[in-house]
Length: 174
Image (cartoon, rainbow, N blue to C red; front, side, top):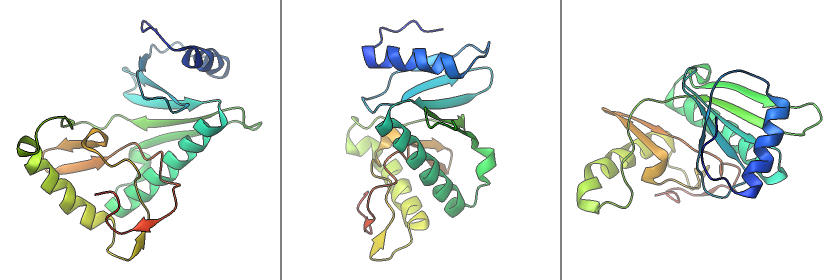
């Protein structure tokens, strides 16, 4: 169910969402920044679903799918373990992406650099492994501690919605 005060655009998208997805699973609406995409969490399934019926949001979902697929390939992780399904409507009325819950924790980006320094070093080492050092490279486009999950020494970069951006010089994200 939904218990949050929702913006009018989000309410409209939720109404459209319910037209396309009929299920009895309870979900939570996760607050996000204004990006024409709604984020739902299904606790029993342990899946996040990004959904949009707006042109810009649909493009971000496709970028998310491509970016996450690219990243998982570079990380040598079977994408089917993380990406559960890309929903494509034949009439292109909506896009939705189901992503498995990635266990771990996020560091707070507003905490001092001294407290986050160890994590920032881990991210830098991970970045070097994933983004091959060449002059022009794909980018994440929003690489902050808010988009990184830490689980012991394992790092997972999430939220690839800006992956379709024009490739930039190596290191652009850091």
